[in-house]
Length: 223
Image (tube, rainbow, N blue to C red; front, side, top):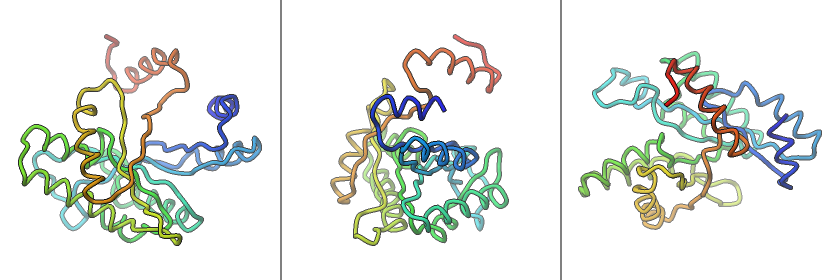
């Protein structure tokens, strides 16, 4: 309710909700957005396992939860596929959190828009590695990862690309370091860029309350 009220107040006509690893709020979000005349964009911030089901053995350096990937339903087919992916992430890929893998994404990719680039993503992980090493092999690994996403999600019926390289500009040095590499990557592969914010609360003054809730959830003390 507070999100939609703020969106209306700011004069925005659409908004997406991409909860971490689930679609629990999607139905309520859509119904309430419809009543206010706001277009609801249904999505998820997926956890993508670093290995497919056929190679599940964990290797050194694998992220515990996998990498983050924003998925948005562009069409009704996309929404149906998003539901399938979310369900299978719980029933087939659960490991601490509900995880998808590349095999699932290749199977249920239609009608979806994918966004990859913030610090929790696979592109960011490889871009950080390249930033530290400046090795051609590390750059090539980053290129291959981006190509997989571009080829997997392809284009929609109008010929528009369905995979975007994501840029953020928070006061986090790692993100500032990799942004030039992400821009170069998008240019070299002719991929579109999207600029966004990793928004977890509505207003700047909500930061402290959000920080407290995070500390409670992670059993940590405030600094």
